[in-house]
Length: 329
Ligand SMILES: [Zn+2]
Image 1: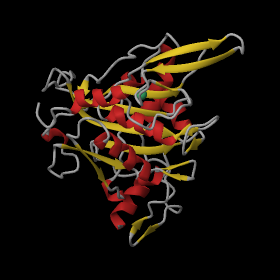
Image 2 (image 1 turned 60 degrees about the vertical axis):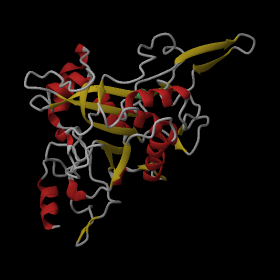
Image 3 (image 1 turned 60 degrees about the horizontal axis):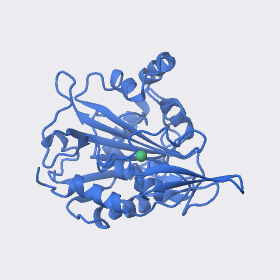
Image 4 (image 1 turned 90 degrees about the vertical axis):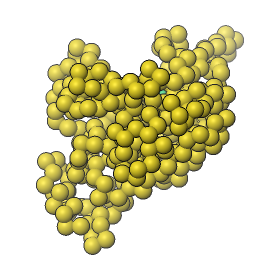
């Protein structure tokens, strides 16, 4: 444990070692490391925001400029705004993403388990709590189990890896003052519930419920490697949730349903895009508006205040499109 303590305290950012309970048994997973956005990214964003550079390009120009993996897609899940969202969305019917996990890909043996025909996910335990109240790891397990078991195709094993601090930083983007080898520790890192300020600092908005960053392998020219079906080889996905919202065990006025948002973001980690068209109905007598998705799926692009903690018909069908032949190419 001595080694970890040294690494923690030697970090450039302000992890307060006196606050972290490092005992003989290791650092207490209930203790929260300090979060920071790397200076290189912050400075780039400060100088580029006015030029409308995407977060994807910002990340690839800074943290991943010399890496063989780059950010390919950044899916931000937001609440619907009747004033601006209807009829302005693109990609409302994207069954699967341009990138896909490649079965048996030796390049992504991140955890060394040698099983490259499963998808491994890890939760960063210190941040697996919403609003300081809801323990979210049981929900992560339930939502991945839904994707694994509730559809028409039960072809892929989605396995949990238990986190401990010796694994180092589970994020390739944020700095937690933990050792960082610059490589993922699993196929999917569920980094957890992070302060709204982090969403503001990185995405330029606090109004994002959750975000999934999808990475692909790139060749020496920076072009995505495509080894199967013309799709780009997925390398890693990391997921954040915004602790600035009021989360709840179920949908309701003024609260956000944990299961719906977690199930949606996990769909992106499993290669799914958004599916469903948003429609606005006006009740002219009452002067009210109602937002409706057709068809209803957890992969509807926006959160409209309704529970989506189940797989809809297209979720199931699109999952089969992505995974039906797994682990064959
Ligand atoms: Zn989404």
